Length: 312
Ligand code: DHB
Image 1 (spheres, helix red, strand yellow):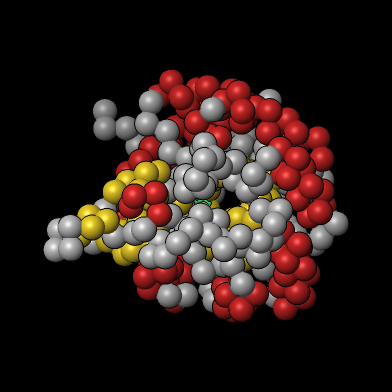
Image 2 (cartoon, protein in one colour; image 1 turned 180 degrees about the vertical axis):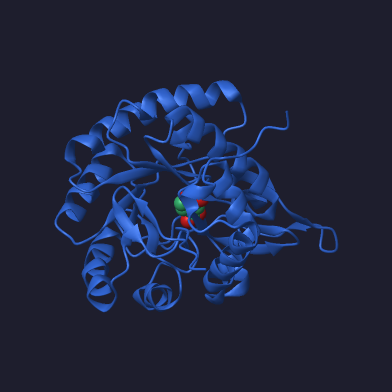
């Protein structure tokens, strides 16, 4: 039985629904080429800013028992490099290439969206605020600010774009955010960014595991899967499948991917597990997902996508 796990995001075809998340190991051309050669179904790039950034002082990432903590501080080569990389990556492989834009100001975002208009980039994931940039709030938690940013970038983008969202925990917040997003031509939302400002402590040294912000950093991996699933589910319901949802947070196995798709995701991204297990994670998750579907008698994602059953 042929098991088809391909998907489309904003009309762009992906051979499988499993790709890398923005953030880990996707900053340099060398790293992006490794992703290009892996089974990741797309090449997602590191969030870029107008100017290149060194990022926060090290150590700024640590593995944890069930995931990770990081406060990278947006280290990246500056958007012009990613504009350049897009053409190189598109020439080398047929996979969709996705740019992640995370400007410090509305003007920066406009400049970067305009620059990618003139590239072969397939999609843009707009990241309105990292949880780790000192002095910069997470824009996804301020609906007025989010509204203004989306208004500005919607005016200039000729590429299909989506929004990377922070996790929400209050049901009322989902309604407020969905209402803003529906005003603009947003094609997808990616849920969730890391859960901001956790603190991991080493009891031996009596110190935090990472240096920036007194040890505060974004939590990813297995710790965040249940909140990621809830965010995917709620936005899938609120958008009635008219705006697609991409799931990210704690995908290590085919079952994890299956659960996200059951909740309504059109694709899943892998972040922490890619750092911890290397590029073979993409093929592993894809194979496990196909096996699981075969056992259940499903041949394509539409057989079960969004069809979470009630307990009744
Ligand atoms: C960084 C972290 C994020 O969660 C994000 O969305 C963007 C950047 C960082 O620290 O580099």
